[in-house]
Length: 156
Image (tube, rainbow, N blue to C red; front, side, top):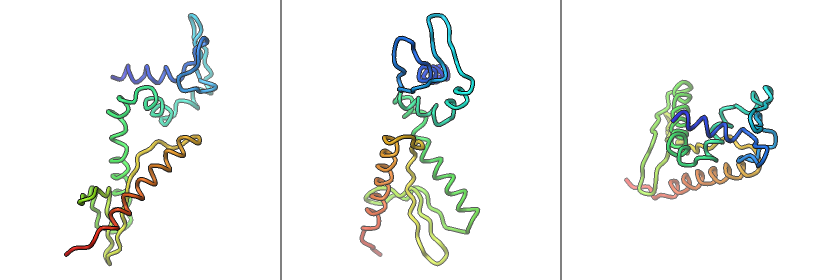
């Protein structure tokens, strides 16, 4: 599996002299010639960030990304939020609150009763207009989920 993931990353970061890079990167850190590679150490440092590796996997092999990365993003965000909130105040925290119309990722209740509803959306940090729009879509989705929950009738 690791060999497959490394191969995907390298495929994304190597410009073929005869064709375009699959991710349309203008200045990839590696260039392949007939029997050799040329690379820039400075570009390697700039391109090999975790975000770029995850983006390469999501673009080049959506199934591997879905099976090994994306399903982990939201639970990690929720666990980090719980850890932060536990350190800052004695909140009552309820992750994964199911109700008839869906689920709230994290419900936070204070001692006097104020409630905070948190919806985690595990997207990659946006770079560029398309990814920024995708992030906005995910935020709108989360707001819709909270509004749907708030619209429920209160029953005893």
